[in-house]
Image (cartoon, rainbow, N blue to C red):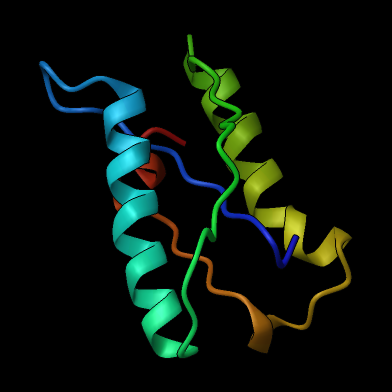
Length: 91
């Protein structure tokens, strides 16, 4: 768990998920490398993306993301979990 990120996103019309992920990876890698005074590749090339087809699936995925750090044995001080209000509105 400490070596990856989970997120649920609704791309804006006209955006490809590949472009969105690439942009997030580039931005975050630049800032993480700067923070740790390092250079080079940070993220792996592949993504695991999934199309959420209904509310039940969205809630299942949200709960998986919420529970993932605990299952990995991470203390809450070592990760950030942000629960978006738009997901709370459907549950």
